[in-house]
Image (cartoon, rainbow, N blue to C red):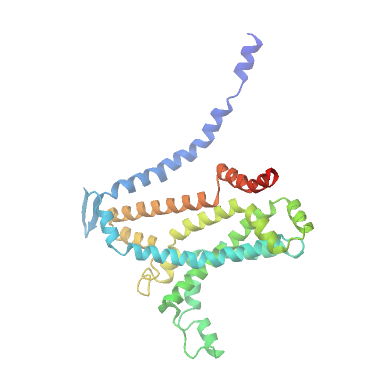
Length: 323
């Protein structure tokens, strides 16, 4: 047997092994995600629910489920979801950016950074259900927060947080902020630490203030991570369920102002109305996909956009040289 044949037999096909190693993921994705997604879309066009012990359907009804969805309080629940997400995300991203800038600033020389990282991240380890039960006990009418405020003379009577729209929404937003700002801070710190230190040194030599350095160097350089944080936070906000569900005992009170889209979906699943639940899931999927694409393409300029911006910046210089 020639040497060429022996070497050909011993040659390993790395591509084949690559496909073998990634096959379990695609098989699990196909069984547990793609097939349920396809079934959800399929049943959204059918009348399929349970009335007592009798199962009605599945009977094809076309777009009737989607029409009924638009005639319901879907838009109200969508507005509730957006308000709750923004109320928690805006302070979260501001505080996380400040903490990331402080902890990565060499000039501040903050001691015990590892300790502060652990403390900041710890609320993310607490289950949302435990967080909701804790806040329910703390901010109840006879809870320690009201007792402290009354004893200090700040309030004459206990404030009914869970009976007030602003109070309940504020508690949900505060819990989402406390649970996730640590994770966001760690991500942003990693992004800032990945910036070339020579850029900060050059800015300092040029006399840039910390504010100018932050807005002209730090923010543009960490844009990809900011896009990731915004998209994942938006997806998590649209899927908000556990905190308001437990805090309001599934009622979304007062007056369903804390009912989110997933709570609305859960109500249909609980009542075994699979057709309407499928329609809600499909609409939520479309909204989420559109918002994510808008955020991605608006905050991540393409290569052609960069060339256009660079050409526009160079135009005045060329005109000055030619003039």
